[in-house]
Every structure is written in structure tokens, then in C-alpha cells.
Length: 252
Image (cartoon, rainbow, N blue to C red; front, side):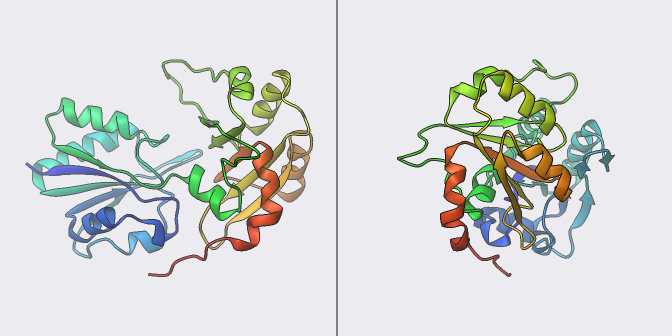
């Protein structure tokens, strides 16, 4: 029997891939990867490895979640090193915990290899520090796209609006009108800055900066689309000062 490694590929820039994750890709027998893993990171995979696309994007699923987990089990029975390659970090809205629990229940050896999550990296590359001594001493990470059948399918936006000084929303572009409405109903000021960061840390990264009052019109006017994160809070104002210092995209 082999072992499954849940590896975080980071947000796109191959320079942000961990050394441990890269080493596993180079010696893997099977790699089952997600849609948002960048081509440069896929190029790190052992050329002899079997590569399987299990990507999920809005409205387009290569494999159902249950099929992916079953595939991991089957491959681990026949191959020593099976890598489940996920964009960002497996345990930050990556369903890594679910997959690991299923593998443990099937008596399959499994290990997690953390990756840099997009909420941290994409905002950093946009020149937006999530904490700052003068602006924010707390951060909340929240999903903007909740799955059916979730234990509690309602995000408490009222609590989130006043629970921390910076809010980072994953997968929230499609539900942005609802999110803005809920934050406004929770009496978060309509002048609160918001940044949308698309394709974080990749060469095509772009940002849309506005406020809760303006962002929906800006999205409609520019045709801004996913994949993107949203950063809400006063730290967004630092974008105009720090964005010219963004890191360069590392080439392998």
C-alpha cells in the first residue's frame, strides 16, 4: 500500500511552492490536481507520473468530490506515492480535511503538506497587508460560496462585519451582490474600502479597488470575473502606496 500526500500548490507563482511539495511532485507516481494549479507547477511533476485533472470551477466539474476521494484510495492501493495537488492550502477552503478523513477511514496512510493560501499571498502581491499597526490587528477568512449539505449553510455576515478589522473572502465574486447587501444590513459603512484581486500572484493578476457602495457597479462596468478574493477593510487603502513594490513572478 502506498501513501497519499495532500499537497498545497500555493496560489500560482511557482516560487511560492514549498520545497517539500516540489520534492513530492518530482518523485510521485500519481498526481491528482485541481483546476487552479498553475502550468509552471504542473511542469514540476515527474514526467513518468500519471496525471489526472480533478479540477472544479463554477459550473464545470471534472470529477465529483466522492469520485476524487475514491480515486485516491484506488491509486494508493497500487502506487507508493500519490499526490493530491491543491491550489493554495489543502486545509483553507480546500476540502483537504474531508479527503483526509475519508482516507483515514479507509486505512490509507495520508499526510498533509501545507501551502501558501491565496488570501495571504494574493493580497500581499497587491500591496495590501492584512494586518497593520495603524489599521488592523485582526483578520477573518470566510468563504463566499457555501456548499449544499454543509453543517451550517448560513455565514453570519453580521458577526463577521464587526468581528475583525480585515475580512478576506474566498470564492465570493459570484455571490458578491448578496455579500455586499448582508454587510450593509449589518451596518458596515458603505465607505469601507474593498479590493478584488484576480489570479493572485500570477502574471495576469489584476485588482479592482472600490468601496462597498461602488464595487458592484465597478464589477459590472469592467466585467471583472473569478477567480478572485475580496479584501475588505482600511488596509485596502495601503494598495495605492505599496502596490508598486509587488513581487515578481518567479520563473522556473
